[in-house]
Length: 230
Image (cartoon, rainbow, N blue to C red; front, side):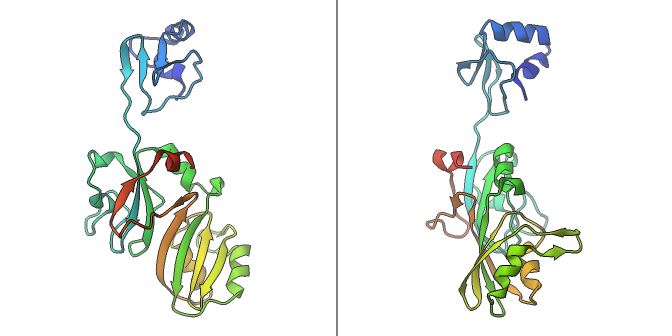
């Protein structure tokens, strides 16, 4: 929210007090004096009024996981292990998943406590492509490329999928780039050709590529450079 609104919502201050304190340079955000009440602050921001800490802030956390098959992309589940069960991290309840994968789909999963960051990564309007390695039961022909590029109509949702890019890598394999995440979208797209998907693995989300050193079930923290690319 805006800094002036944050200050005005405090029980000991009102909006007039907030404007005065900002004008006097008495408010710091993450160690820097801020005079503009329109400055955005979040739960990660450390906000001080002089020597008084109004909000300590908390560290933003970002992880890359190589999801194995048979693990649910959820924070809790009554029957299956979840991706959070694979993390040896404190306060895991604060984390959420950016871009879920089906139970038997493997590959890149991003887990964070930064909601704005994950929304930038997953919202269709961001146009950050997600790349999947697909294996199918029947051969994949060049016809698929044109149909996927035009978009497919899904009657259940009454919508047409965004254009997707398909690169055929073998008789029964391809790389598919999506710019949205509809329910079972890839299986339904190949189902248009009555071709069953028998293997699905996500390799990339936007600028972030799955670390080849991560075995299934392993994870690591993202680097500052990786975080800033989104």
